[in-house]
Amino acid sequence: MTAAGVVARLISPILWVTAASAASPAPTVNAVPVFTIGKSQNKNQVQYAVHVDSHCAPVPGAPVFAYWQMLELGPTRVAPLLRREFRAYGIASQLVSTHHADGGKIRLVLQALPKRPILVETMRGSNGTCLALATVAIEGSPAHLFNVYVKLKWLLGVDYLLVRGWSIDGTHILTEKLEV
Image (tube, helix red, strand yellow):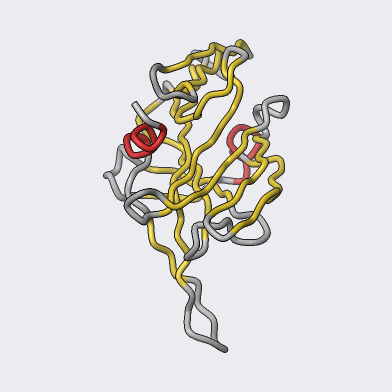
């Protein structure tokens, strides 16, 4: 399977967000899904996405953001992360390292995984839509991250994380269990 095929299987439809400006017509900014975090407690997921411009390049500042997909309430229900959830699901840092005509790269570090930086790359797909790939080390090999599963302990805390991604050549899934 080609990398484009892997991307097509992993990326859900693009969300359209409009940023309003009183001085000029409102520019359109795409919010492209990157990866999710699910947990053993319920079906809700934290979705990470990246704001890109009409050329699929990351917007300036902090383009990657996270929000809840409230799947237990319906497929289109979303909610912001609560402040108390930032330690588990928040973004520690992000830096747009490359910005070019048809995409860019962002170095992303999550609060919960500070020693495992993620490279988010945005690009225009063969069908013209904007895509994003997150690359991270899984079992010592680079992989295209698509999901982190959090197994919660019975009372409080995290038992383990299961990090999953496609191999760079798109032929198989890599999985790594991280004890917390």
